[in-house]
Image 1: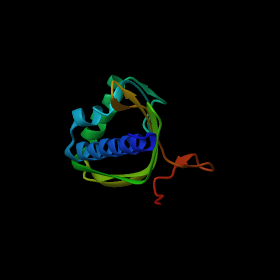
Image 2: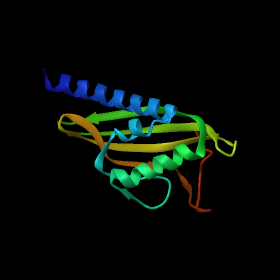
Image 3: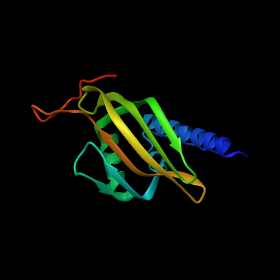
Length: 148
């Protein structure tokens, strides 16, 4: 198989992993969500603290997210870019998460998402990811109202 064909195959595998993540979020399946992350994952998420080191620490974030939503969580990935090397890959996209909070309040937020994958023992896993939202520099407040 040519180098280009291998990269295309790996990009398709990563795309399917992201599709699995969407299904796992919708189904509130914590094991499915965590199956994408390497044990040593480093996460810069939109919720404090500044970073999470290790899958166990990051798992708690997902458990909290699942707790504050009632019913299914809707997740969409837009403008996805996947760049694949031999054993590392990078993705970035604009992602939308929506649903109903446990308080009954509806939420619909867009975030910027970047993930770094490493092929470990033949499996692509996320070793680093970052989620962000734009900040209004004049007020210091996150801009959660922006849409692509």
